[in-house]
Every structure is written in structure tokens, then in C-alpha cells.
Image 1 (cartoon, rainbow, N blue to C red):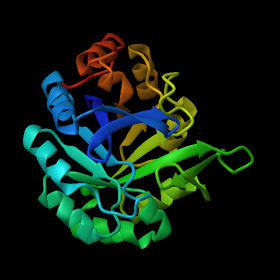
Image 2 (tube, rainbow, N blue to C red; image 1 turned 45 degrees about the vertical axis):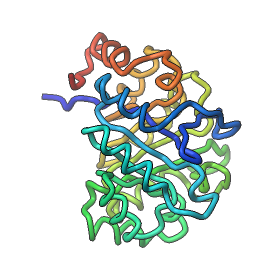
Image 3 (tube, rainbow, N blue to C red; image 1 turned 120 degrees about the horizontal axis):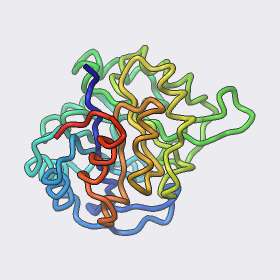
Length: 254
């Protein structure tokens, strides 16, 4: 029996508000994170991902109060990322209601962080967040970025994903910066490449614009599909996406 695919709304938060832009730029206010989290929970979201998109840039920790209030409103797994620099940061997030924690920039700066988190809390808690850009001329054609997509690295995205899994990452959140906010569909090549190398679940992120975009991401290898603006704007509901996946023969949770 195949595993049900997950539908995950993403709350990109800055200064306590949900924001969304295009290609990680020109962020605009989309609402209150606690209210949106409660709405998506009621709609049947399988999980929620909460990313403090300016925490690393501002050199501060994630907004713990918003995480706590969000966790009090929803009773599905909550992944929190942004500004996580140590295993103690993970402990604090778990204490206020997070179930999983995403790391990106700090792990690239100090890869040992991944093993420290996995050893202390288990791989099931550790999500590697990959903000990926196309980079023609590199080995795989993709590199990872840091600081909310603002800083490009020379680190090949596929090589880094492999290393992170070896170090204890229990899930890959693969976000295409090129597709982000465009509503042109997920980067299926990127999803497929990550699926080929990964022994852990892959979450596809970036580019969802219609119900027709989600099933191809699953067929490309995604275990879960994540979206933001199409949900925040009310263009789609969680139910719309699950209905489309079901119609395509893909098992979802009801």
C-alpha cells in the first residue's frame, strides 16, 4: 500500500506577519500567521511549515511567541525554520510546540550542526531546508543559497543534500528560488534529481499556481507538496489540492 502524499501550507513570516514575494523578493503582507494556521488546519492540511524568512538576515532567533501561539491552534505536525544555529535553538523550538525544525544557512556554515541535532533529537526532527538556484556550468546545474536566498554559494545542491542525509537529515525541503512565487509550476527536474539521490522524504516547494501543478510534482518524486501564495490568497484550498491529487490516482489523507 502506497504512502499518502502530504499537502503542506507554508507560512513565511517576517516581523510577526505572513509575507510572500516572487523569487524571494518584494515581500508583501498576507495576514496573521495564527489565523492562517487555524484556517489551514480546518481545511485539512497534513502539516504546517513556518519559516521566519528574515531571522538569519537580521541575525536573530525565530519568533518563539508566534510559534507558540500557532502550535496552540493546530494539532498537526509543525515544522519551524529560520535563525536556527544550535541544538539548543532546536530544544527551545520543540519546547514551544514545534515538531520538526528546519535548518539551512547555519548548517552550510557549520555542517556538524546537522549531526548534533540528529544525535540529540533524532533524524525525524531534522529537516534540511534547501533554497536552490539554477546555476548553469555547475556539476548538477543547481547550487544552494543562504540567508533567505540572498547569498549564493558554490555548493552543489545535490552534493549538499547527499552529505546532509549522511549527517542525519530526516527530510529534504527543496525550494526552487527560480520558481518561487511565479505560479508557473514546480521545478520538476529539481524534484526528480533530489528523489533519485534521497533516502528520506522530499518536499517540493516553489512555483505552485494551480491544482494542475501538484500531481506532476508527486509523479516527479515528491513525498509532499508545499505551497504558500495560492493558499494565502484564497485561490486554492487544501481540499482543492487533495481532490486534484485523488483524481490523478494519488493517495492523500482525508
